[in-house]
Image 1 (cartoon, rainbow, N blue to C red):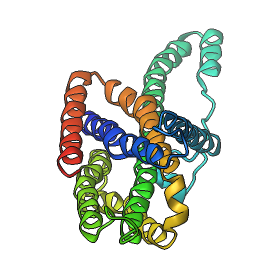
Image 2: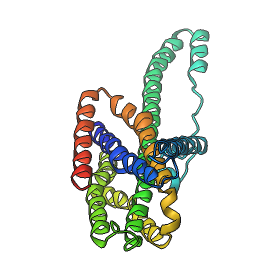
Image 3: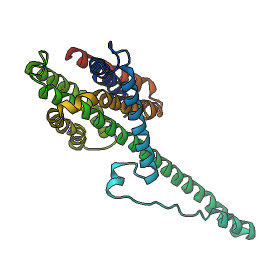
Image 4: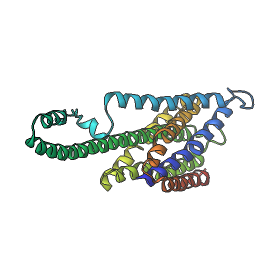
Length: 283
């Protein structure tokens, strides 16, 4: 689980720059809206990045306030109530009775052991729910990240013929590159789900669901190319901010929490290299 979360963190960090921030800066600079030489291109990118982080922060607050901490909660939300411990009453009885108090005392000690086991089980349940919350946020971040990528592909095809550089070949290569670099992103979602107890089929299915928004956004980008282009830098940076916030606030702390920090760190390095290599090699 920790290694897979580390891998996901590495993939998301690399994707946030090479897939999102770098093209966002280039697009903003090319619009000539932010200075003749694009010297103010960092403004829309910074704003989008901040709003993306704020979006995940607010989503986290909403999930915490509503008690939705796992996919199970979305289907069947249960309210758990802790029963009051009878231990103080047993202790009082022990003080009042003589010989029988000794037997009560022995029962009290046995009850304490059972009580501590119950406490431990509750702590493990809370930890599991907190882990689920992080996985849900990871899926949200990857899904949000796929929206501007889909818009970019749609814009690429919708803009064919508008400029000399806007050709079918360039749009096809962009779609192919984004499609291939989606493989490690799907793995970044599926691996933590599999490690958390989902079946292989369900882990793959939910990994695919996080990418279904991309073709929908592609159609939208192609249909509204003249309107989408000016907001693409904001959308790309928004997705990058969401991903980086999830990595820093949730995934890395979770991967380090069980004493497997070194293994998780190496998982992050491998994930970063894989994603960086695909992004750079495929343009």
